Each structure stands twice: as structure tokens, then as C-alpha cells.
Image 1 (cartoon, helix red, strand yellow):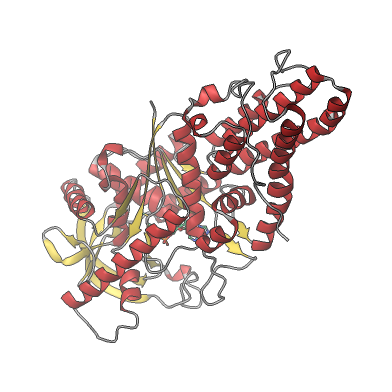
Image 2 (cartoon, protein in one colour):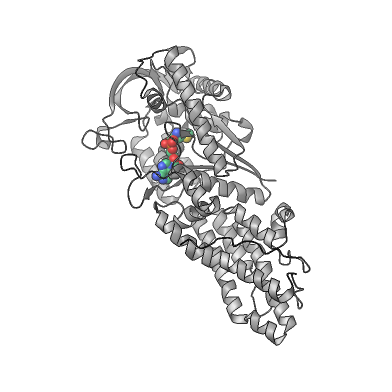
Length: 506
Ligand code: ME8
């Protein structure tokens, strides 16, 4: 059994999840479900990044106590506890199938970060120096003058703090050549390709040693042997992927947004090399999306709550829309109007209508019992579905997820055409039982295959299709390669036509 260890970023808890966080998380969930279905031993890790200064700012906002020391820590701890619970509730609402959830304030993490620090220190890659720079708490990173726009961080629209303090540094520059070599010899390491070029340019021109501690902070993990210094949040957060449970390391896939590629494709592998640990197999950085064409922002007031969308339309609809609308890897746009258009056009009129059409005919013409396929089902009527499976598997494995869904919809549309061509209602009138049985069997068995292909994307819909086909829960327990074979739907099975899968929205 092959292992598949997949992670999402651990998100900051200074606010609740928005549609961007849900996107990464849902994509990871699709892949986790796909690999589980294929019989792989999947470990899907998520978590919350709690030691960042931006969480402290959020926790203390409105607390005019000027609290310091213990008092600050208590307030922040209470805040991160509450917020982490909220994040976990949101993922539960969205039915995310993660196997573990790590919080960076947990003992397992803190202990591991300190051990890791010692290892890197012993490798000679940590040294003390004075850092002078402009720190943006929004990014939790130092900024160069050239990155600022009119003195402000372009992403957070505020002036970074001028810092000059004695810090510990990590010798990133020492790993420049090795990193470039690794990326060159492992094209799968940074994906998609456009991001690989971006990271190569970054490593060549900018991968300088970076400060990995901050002085006199009230919150965060103390540097071993020097409690006046706190470990820099990225030198702490990245380690969650191992600290959660080192038995799973190395990860097969880190799924991240393009904003944090430098941390995952330069800092992280160098840190791992220094500690003598293997590197993750692939870091995939997807694009960012806007909302109705605008950058998502609290000031504009267009921040989309994924839980509200899911409650309004259903989890599967949100998943379908996000995965189909945005070419995986590229930037995209979220629009509720587009979601409704896709719902009516592709779910209600497309898939939902096909399922209803086929099952109504089975009910009406063959008394709700799956007919015997007579001559063995495959002839000039239908050239088989191997091509759909072939395309689907290849897109899924190369992470071209929107195209995998396109394949399923091409399949749906071929079946619609098949109905129009064969006109089962005419066959029923002519009493051409052989032909009628054959057509209906082909249609119903193909619905089973379509439901399987949709399973990672729309698990509730898959279950509903199986139920309506009379297959029930046992179908889901079948071996993936077996499910792909023709003939899984046995003649004699009694169907249970249920409610419409996707009632039209008006
Ligand atoms: O960076 N479109 O956490 P974070 C698509 N704690 N994805 C988006 C998005 C958008 N508009 N906005 C956010 C951190 N995301 C660190 C990570 S990991 C060791 C530490 C998603 O809460 C995307 O996955 O700022 C992005 O990388 C992530 O949220 C940033 O989440």
C-alpha cells in the first residue's frame, strides 16, 4: 500500500477562515479522498499557526490593559484557543476529512521545534548577528525598500516597523547551490512550472541568511538556552509538518498558495537539509483569487465566508464550483453569480437531469429493476468508457483537477446524446425489449462510473447516486480498480429513485 501524506498551510488565527483558505483546504480534501479511494494509506494534516505576532495583535486589540508578561500570555492563549476551535468547527462544517490537526501551541510541536533548533545549531548553521530591517507583521517577514510602495507594504497597506536588534540567523546562503541543484534535478519539487522559475530566480538573487529569532517578545517559542529570544514564526510554523507525527515524514505534497512559496521552496528545504532530514516530494502552489474581480479585503467588505456559501448551496456545490471554475494553479475569481450559473447549467441541467432521466426510464419501462444487458452491453451504441477513465486518472495524478472535472462533464454529455440518439421511449413503444434493456443498462452502469469519478469532488452526491441506483453504502467499500471495470451494477438490482439531486435555482 503506497503512502500519501498531504498537508495544507497551517493558517493564522487572527481571523476566521475565508474562501481562500477554504480553497486550499478543499483541494487537499479532494486529493486525500482520491488517494484513499485508490487504496493508498493517506495522512492528511491541517492545523493552526498560533505563535505569530499578528495573532497577538488580534488578541490584544480592544484590550486597553497594557497587559504585559503573564497577563498578555493568558489573554493570547485564551484567544488562540477560541480561534483554533472556530477554525476546526468550520472545517467540520465543510466535512473536511483531515486525519490530524496540529496547533503550534501544543507540547508535541514546541518540543520538536526546540529539538530541531538544536540540530541545526549543531550543524553550524545558526549564528548571532545584528539585524536591521523593516518588519511587516502582516506578512510576518522582513521587507526590502524595493518591495514597499510609497513606504507601505503593498499587501497590508501599512508601514513596516523599523527593527534593529541582535538576533540569531540561519545560513540560508550556504544552501543556495544545493537548493538550485535539487530543483533542477527534481522537476516535480516545485509545481506548477511557472512557480519553479519564480523560485529559481529568488534563490539565485535573494536567498540570503535570514533572522530566525526576535528579541523580547511576550509570545512564541523561546530559543533553547536563550529565553530572551523567541523563535521566528516561520522557523517554528514550517516544522508542524514533521512535529505532528514524524512517522509520516517526508510529505508527498505540500499544498500552499503562491504567497508562501518562498518559505516552502527555499527556507524549508534548506532547514531540512541542515537538520539532515529528507525533503518533501512536491510543493504545489496554487493561484490566488479575487472576489467579483476585486482583491478580498475587510475594508472593501467583500470577504466571503465559505461556511455560509456551503450552508446556502451545499458542500458539494461549493466544492464543485471552486474546483471547476479555477484552473488549478492559476489565479481565479470567486463570484456567487457564476456559482449560480454553473449550478443551474451544469449541476441541475447537466448531471442532475441526466440521473433523473435515466432513473425515470428504468422506473417506467422496466419496473425499477436494472435489466439484463443482453448481448454483453458494448456494441456500436457505446464505445466504452476506458478513454474517460484514462483521461480522468491522468489529470488527477498530474493535479490538473479542473480538467478531470471537464472529463466527467464530457462523459455526462455523451450519455445525454446517447439518450437522444437511442430514444428509449420509442423502443418501449415498439416493445423492442432487447435493445431497450441494453440501452438502459448502459446508461445506468455509466452513472455508477460517473458517481465514482465524482467521489473525491462531491462525496455526498456520489452517495446519493449510489443510493438511487440501489447500490447503497457497500459500493463505497469496493476496490478502486474493480469499480472501474464494466458490469459493477448487477442486473436485478432494484433502484430507488429519490429527490432531484440539484433542484433548479430561481
Ligand atoms: O501564511 N486565494 O497563513 P495564512 C487563494 N500561517 N488562497 C488563499 C487566499 C486567496 N485570496 N488567501 C489565502 C500563513 N489563501 C502561514 C502559513 S504554513 C507552515 C504557515 C490561502 O492564514 C493560501 O493557501 O495567511 C495561502 O497560502 C494561505 O491561505 C495563507 O494563509
